[in-house]
Each structure stands twice: as structure tokens, then as C-alpha cells.
Image (cartoon, rainbow, N blue to C red; front, top):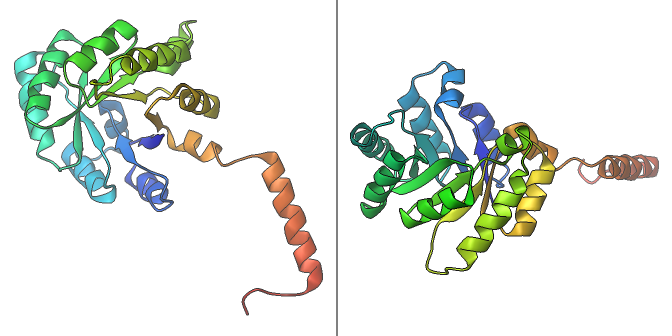
Length: 219
């Protein structure tokens, strides 16, 4: 499974990229707005930090403007994945950009039917939002299971399942068990993956025992 981080905070992205665990970045207009910085400056900097895909989202809702925005965004870096909403205009834009060789992330997917259309349109990634489904009393992970199964029925489909709106480490583990291709994760949730009380307890015991020996590995 690939890990993308869902943020536009370049300092956070640099820190995570240094771990070697980061495969890409997803952003959206809300995340970029939180930085208070110029949109194009932020996206350009992110593209220089990571080698993997950087999702940059269009702001238009009509096809013609969306396509022009998508072309401009694609020009910001070779690793840009243009992010479009799962609407008819978004799918039409996806189809045109994909034919031109541009990576496309179709976002705001909330049903398996929508995911089928995204794949038909040539999406590189489809982003089902599991947390937002959980928020309205539906089981978001059931949607991931359905999409993975459907895509698996058709080996010719190249669209990857990018699990989005992740709220906790359990979402990530369940997505991995289902065979999802990518999880895009808020920085704090990605850091939670490494934490376990028994790890902390064991490390403390090892260090205490080592200190008793009076020895040093260096110096």
C-alpha cells in the first residue's frame, strides 16, 4: 500500500518525506487556504519535495473552465495529478486530461457506481471518502471493499483506489486488508501508526537495562 499525506503544510511534508515512508501528497482548496500562501507557490514547493504524485484540485465546476484549469495545473510539475470532482463535468475533464497523458485524481466519491464511472473515464485514482460516510451513519469501509472487488473483476482497469477522509489508524489497516492501493492520511494519523504502548514500555526497559551496564556504543 502507498501512503500519501493529506496536507498543504510544506514543513510537515518535508518532515514526513525524510522518513522515506511518503509516496505522494494530496491537497484541496481548503488545505491550501489554511497555509495563507499563494496557491501556485505552495503546489510548486510540494512538487519539489516529493517525487510521487501531488494532487492539485481545480476550482471550476463547468467543463470548459475545469479543463483549462486542469491543463494549467498539470504544467506545474511532472508529478502533478489533477484533482477533479466526481460530477459529469469532472468526468469529462478527466477523460480529456487522461488522453493527454495527465494523471487525474477523481475526488468526492461516495458510491461504487461513481467509482465505476471514474475508472471508465480513465482516472489514475478514485478517492472514496470513508470518514464522511461514517459521519452520516454509513460504513465507509464497505464502499472500499465494494470498489476493490469491482475493479478486481476487470484487470484491464488501471484506476487505483485511493482511500480518503481517513480518521484513524483502523481505517488504514482495514483498507490494507481489503487491498486498497493508496491511503491519503492527515499527518497526525500517519504518526499515530507508529505508536503502541507496549513499544514504549519495551524500549524503556531496554534502555534502563543498558544504562546499568555502564557501557556506550559511541564515545
